[in-house]
Image (cartoon, rainbow over all chains, first blue to last red):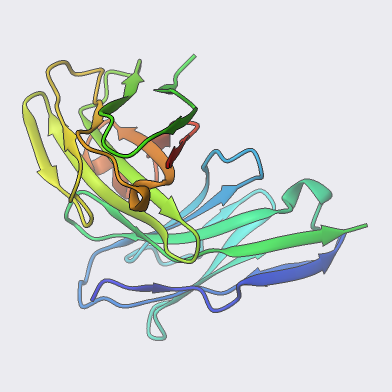
Amino acid sequence: AQKITQTQPGMFVQEKEAVTLDCTYDTSDQSYGLFWYKQPSSGEMIFLIYQGSYDEQNATEGRYSLNFQKARKSANLVISASQLGDSAMYFCARDTGFQKLVFGTGTRLLVSP
Amino acid sequence: EAQVTQNPRYLITVTGKKLTVTCSQNMNHEYMSWYRQDPGLGLRQIYYSMNVEVTDKGDVPEGYKVSRKEKRNFPLILESPSPNQTSLYFCASSLELAGLRTGELFFGEGSRLTVL
């Protein structure tokens, strides 16, 4: 099954601290992509970061980095220096090669002052 | 401004009353798809389209229809809505499959549908 697992339904972090959101995936494919999206309370889906399975380096986009451990099939999102505006739902996803993304169930992050 | 536009954003309807959620993109994207989001289940693909007149089922197509008569539009049709179709719906588009590989999947703002 093309399953994405996010085991943390909710996470709390204080402003300016770093936080790691976990994501593991099933696959027997050699080539695939992993994604993280942010969904604020307003509901829209915002693309954060992408990691290709053949990329040798972990992806980074500003304060976001993806800790990719291929052998463990994990693709954790690291947010450095959390801000209040980071409070949102975060979804991990991977492409399946069948024209779609498969999403995890999401992790709700709450950043406190 | 590049965008994916969905309408309506919010809708409350009753069981059996046909409705259409429109989706339009202004980026000349070939690939479009519909997802539904339910608590505890994440987003699941309903249908997708690789180009005009080319559509195919996703993971949860039951109770839905789509059409792709023009490149920019990809409406989602609920012929006879039922309460289990109460959900948050997202339309998404990308230039092509390669775009999907780099994360360039553009989402609409979502349409929250309630079926009573």
